[in-house]
Length: 257
Ligand code: NDP
Image (cartoon, rainbow, N blue to C red; front, side):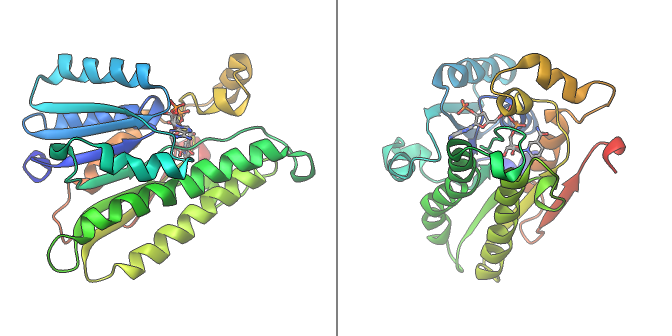
């Protein structure tokens, strides 16, 4: 796997926390000799700290570039690739991980602001990033090459009361991913989706508008996955032989079965 990842340039969205942060570390640890990691999120200071931690742990073989980027802002995403230093533009892997849930409310009570932020981040943001980076993949021979790894959710397959909008965003991710994979058939552009169940991250803190006690209660008495559990799968699918497409992965803690 280390050999297959060697020399690659990888973009991770939502790398300032949780699954994205773990994914950055997992790539760096798996292929520490010759890798470029572009870490994006809104919290640039946190990204800079993560970049320094990665360098401290694995050394200079992994180059890390923190970039402030709000995926829900199309103009920022459009400028993103063009603003990268030349040697960072030959991107091979895009991990579309940035996403969030806001509130736990029955459909009639969901406020417009929360609806918009979930759709604009989870769906439009993921599409914005994909459209920005696909031209780089398509320039490669034989119709193109590269990996798009979308983080969906079990919520996109099994909607639950109180989560109608979040579930709808993740169902949209699923449809978009499946359609794109079919559009790119017979190229070496792999379009893959990983759908986690419950993972303990800042996700629930964001859901409850920063209320840590409410977030902690979500995990009380159960044994959720860790962000590392998901990161290992991301690196696994990216590290397969180029002809192997691990199209669709559902991963959840045993209590959620
Ligand atoms: P976290 O809240 O820990 O991380 C979410 C990340 O997304 C942060 O780095 C945040 O960074 C980033 N983000 C949010 N909005 C934006 C934006 N507009 N532009 C750029 N980055 C943004 O949650 P998780 O790690 O758990 O979530 C990662 C993905 O996993 C999400 O897509 C989520 O839906 C999915 N998922 C999570 C599950 C769970 O139980 N935790 C289960 C199933 C799926 P910043 O605030 O700095 O911008």
